[in-house]
Image (cartoon, rainbow, N blue to C red; front, side, top):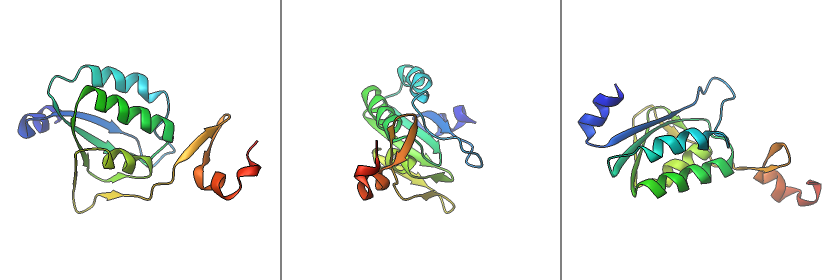
Length: 131
């Protein structure tokens, strides 16, 4: 199916999919695997099929920077949902394709402070509570 979509669109298709019925999210370890995909890009026009509830803001920034390093023409396809940091990825693209059941979500970044990500709004609301 990936090959069929790529041939029909004339663009290379990459897929980033997390199971949105679980707690799976973008995290720092994704960079290792995604860098391999990005390095293999042959077509300067890339579609990124994206399905995610979001994840770590640092990982998202790294993903977008890395993808932009390898190509300057990125379009994000959102079949169902790109929430939180998934919305940030979509907004960083040159274009977004969505269908009637597609949705973006509020951007609620989290920042890693120690071993656990902390919602940015918590840091803004109570900056002295962070140790």
